[in-house]
Length: 480
Ligand code: SF4
Image (cartoon, rainbow, N blue to C red; front, side, top):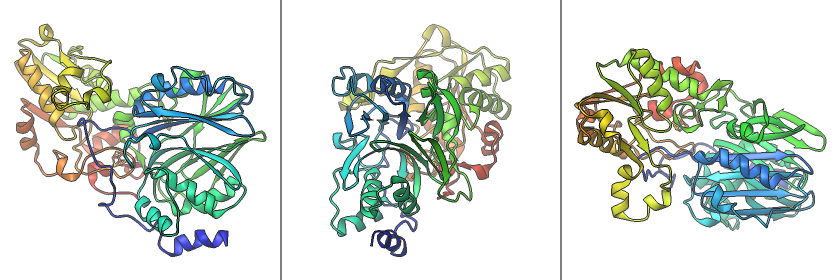
């Protein structure tokens, strides 16, 4: 009966593709692409896992600032603390988790793409079912979530959240195997989309990456135990060593018996999100052995070769574009300057809190250094353009500050299509490049000149073939 349910899911068409119009999350509040989430997991009995997990989540904070949470197992039950806000806010005072004789833990930082930013959607999610407790943290997005949810609701399931991540808990609970590994082997083939999951049971930590490997998930060692994280910068922060990336379609199970890795889903092609290199990941992280900062410098160098311009200074948009700007300047043999200063203390909540503040947005966060740019021909290097509103404001601010010419150079190709794999990229209509030619975009933004990096230029810089990457928002060709 239990197995039949999963098979019935498949034969009834669960997971058989998706409709582009069913995803509820396509919004772009600040004209900057937003990462969906960061996950962390650790198995280290007897250690202070509340503290270690908090430090790891602080390192992953750039991947999501709306909510944070940690679930800790003491070997018999799972304790959870989560809430809306930054890691430093949610875990500033932490009596709920302190002093727990911990065995393992998982953590999550969230930016809501699927399901909205309600408090109940904060992760990890924790359930109690007939075989005990189970917690999950998810980075990615399931493209057949609406379809699966509709079926489950019709059959009587009651959902506590509006996230796609909760689906996997329902499916695991329904298929009914006592062993989580067996349950996941039955459930995961039903899911379509991007997922890097970390699961926590009373005695085990389990990590899974979707067969396309869209979102990263790395495995490390810490004090003789194992850790999992969306990015290796979390390992550096807690003093862990990188072992390797979890393979697409692989499940790693960590418990008192050690580590066991198993390929549970066939991976016919990899589709790692190229934006992890361009923008999302922290510069000190390594993905597939490549350092993100160094890849960004290469993107900048290639951009200079493809889109050179006579100028006096090169500047980048903090923080994600600084490496590309440095690469561009090096290749051009021009001075790289800190032409834009970022205010690091303006939170998302504040910017969204009122129309007047929202319209100020960019000025509140970024300001040009007037004395530096006055009378100069300036090149601004940015990593991407989404709607174009930020670029327009930036260019305008530089002209107002006295720049003679403002040349905009983008270290990626034009974003022409939305993302369905857990990244907040707007609808087609909102994307400035989806229906406009280069000159039209330049005019709308008001730059003296505009140049994007070619798709081949991105591939050459990342040093991966197109078949190993997702480039869907640049090409409109969706791998899943
Ligand atoms: S569509 Fe773009 S942002 Fe989304 S996973 Fe693919 S490359 Fe990344």
